[in-house]
Length: 304
Image (spheres, rainbow, N blue to C red):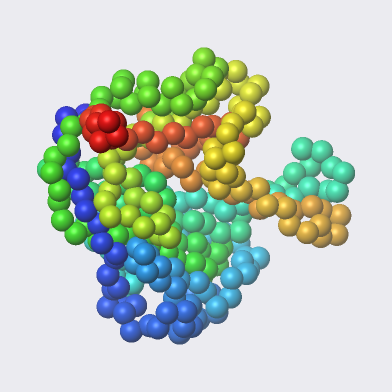
């Protein structure tokens, strides 16, 4: 149930954990868990976000392990780095796949293989005794693990909650959905596929002084034939869509053309409106709506 009011949460850059505090910025240090036995630390000063990259970033061609083994490796690393706290949500494992087909081949010739996994922990904040999801590209720990279990990358975008601000009124689902429909341009051809609400934390390279209370909607075309076609869109939404989906061709090797298939980052599959997995098409439109009922009215009042 969506509460009628929620407090604003003020932010400050994340503090370094004891394990990483002694490592200078952009310095490579021994790290047994990472591929090559070394990792380089980068810290984003605007948010305190931490990024660790292995000395060797190639994915070795090894058989895949079980999901439980990858989860155990991720849990051990999170504990070692001091990133474990009460706000950790349940981990989500996403397989990282490659696909190849003969040059001039057909779709039935495509062969897929796993090269590793991405283990993701999303943030959940306890507010007034209720666990509330953190949306957006922040409030997340991501650990990329190759098939053999070595860590390729690990990152944490997890700003410090500095203090709690005043309570603000929250829009109803119907109000927010109607506002989102108004931004579609052609709402009649879309249906609501997934929605969530919570606090939104931006990416690590974005300056932010508070967690915004936000609804997140994902709309898909009603006609199934249109779901893998790009919709007409503004240049701003086109840029956002390009950031959300990655299909990167690699060089042709022998008689095969290889692709790395990425995925959408806008919607977390751990808790969708229909309870199913995250399956978003090219034409999915993701819209964030402020949950504060009177935010627009206050803004308009200041202009007048």
